[in-house]
Image 1 (cartoon, rainbow, N blue to C red):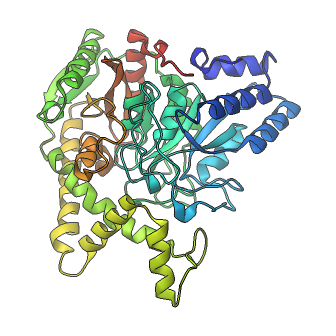
Image 2: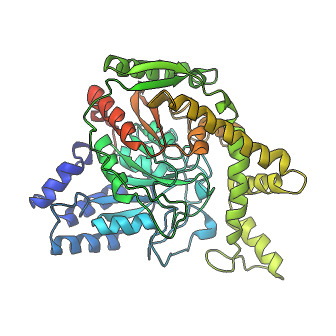
Image 3: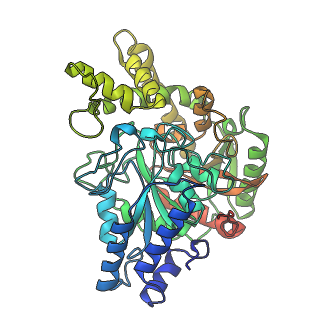
Length: 486
């Protein structure tokens, strides 16, 4: 039996090359773990047993490429990233029978590496939520405590990696949907710079904010996974043509001499004291390792949530118009008397409450008479937030702070209070609005639950984030502490 807690990308690759393991054995192990955990974790929506085993057998038959680290290794994919021939639902009833006929760009790149897709992970419906409880396919649980949420919207991917079901996973981040579940589950989660990774084949929530990113247990694995999926895509005009560097180059240099800003707003009222204590202790470790720590200010970050929910909901109301019952996915058939009836009934029955809430909010913000007061004003606030970050990064290499305002909260505890749920993304949303790269790593524990440390970098400077995260990981060795999983 392969214990993914005791392995990393390099050790698994070596065992495949040395024929101590086969790709088929690894795939079978990942499938076995996925199935065994479903009742308690519900991390997957679809487990592709047949497809994964077949792909693994083909990898063994052709021989594992010694120069390709991901060849034959299992990976999980968030269920809003389309996969050719494999059901992709975005955790919504309206797409519960949708089988794509093409691969997302990141899936094409993963298949080129020889990675084996084990299945599609659970998420908040259309990535709208912060707890993976809005899924049509049921809630997902936290890997450390099954009575707690795993975070959202990429909770399934985060829980699968944290619980040792699979060594790597992809998620997407619109307002914190990679970093927040990474924090709640005590793993490494990176949202790249907007444009670093193609969005082609990512089912759109908010096109100016969405980014595909990476989940791993260790920092160097994360850097290598990002390199595997990053790069220019001719099908996505927002993807950058900047060369993709080797993110592991210089990763072991340490943080000595780095100037790090710590925003005073990230330790203000509304952040639990236990979060502040653990993160401040983590920041002190950076200082001991030779980094220069300064207190800085991001004064407009307090308006991030208000601006985000206007902008993101407005873009969602436009993006979700395509789900009308005509072209693909679910279509209402009972008592449909006209085209308008089809639209109304399909969307009423196909979308969940949170999705409907955001469509209504976005449609209102874009409507005549309210556009200037809401959408335009939110866009102006976004510019102010970008300027705040630019001022700090003029003199600093990185920004550090908490990822979340609390540790993982109880399942069901915030379902009836959308505003309280939205406030959980207080510290992550400004990074999306500014299009910056951001990572969450495990900073420590509070009452047995992980606490996330957020590392924010300059545009396209993921390398410095990885350098700082790796130094902290080596100093603390927190990845060695793992949840108990049946």
